[in-house]
Length: 158
Image (tube, rainbow, N blue to C red; front, side, top):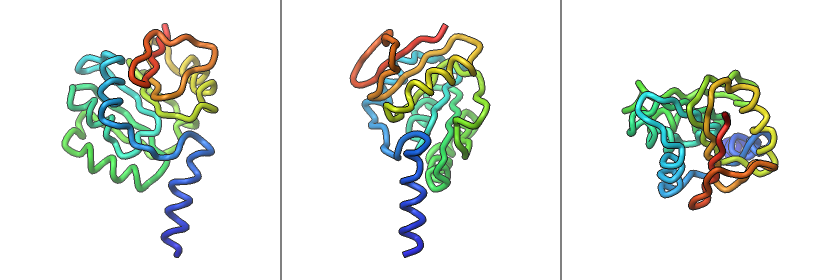
């Protein structure tokens, strides 16, 4: 019973800071990475990295990948899934809204609609070099995506 309550809390409370855990499908992961167009050695930031599958896909292409995840169970799973690529992958346990973000050439998110405006502000405040944002499913209010493909919206921040 206590384990069930703990799991519900770990997987359910994240909706108050981002989105519940829903894995990005392989097709959307590939599309997001294609649209971000990052080259080996560049850095991708994933906010809410879940089980690490997008980080792993990016690392397989030689992209340095940094993921934030609030759920400690998913952090452990992500570390296991990305272990082979640990030189190119960093997983940070914590609330990405409260952390200082590193400079990133690209950012990937699968957030809820209600957080997209906050995300836009945070990107503008935290990134001092040009970056791109690939958002699965949800648009940034008031901004026109540079590209829209297979449920991924790409935004450029110059």
